[in-house]
Length: 264
Image 1 (cartoon, rainbow, N blue to C red):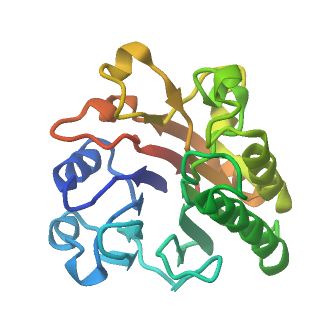
Image 2: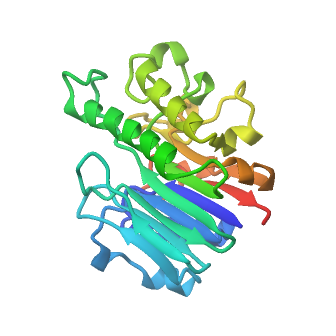
């Protein structure tokens, strides 16, 4: 089973790029974040033509939105809300083999890393805390689960272009890293990308639109993640970070797709 995840930053604007991803990598399941479209307007027809006839979408106009697109049928599906909001940030579905797949979009958190001065940052921290509690109380480490998405936190030193310079920048502050690390530890989540790429190596999935030449400056961050629970660790057989997709035209997303292969 090949699972891909991508913060596409508007599925309607970048449908040609999504179809390119499908043609080049042939994932069985695709999870999207920032679809930015209400469900009734989600462009399913070209995806169904490619075989993705099973869809679990949860979107809103212009902001957020998550989806699971699958060639494989769902045994069940659901939506999870956080922080008293219904802002379309978390869907999950059960795939064949009893695998529960979660597509998640954690809030970015604004620019000021102080929850007292910045409500968006406070929301982000609360969101991660609530998720951590949910995993601990509602799910078991022996459950076969995969969580993917734009978690908007780069936890490791080599997940950012400069650990020292980004310590006070939202996405790599110590408080965010500590909370994401606690969430990972809550039920023993395995960081699937770092299962293949040692923490001593740089690894990015996002490059800012502000850079005139993103490839030359290479000031990236690893904001997009794939985690699996312990029963699936030994099933991991491969991974890919499609760095080249940051340069796909027209109008690339600032995130690139990442994927893993599972031998099931």
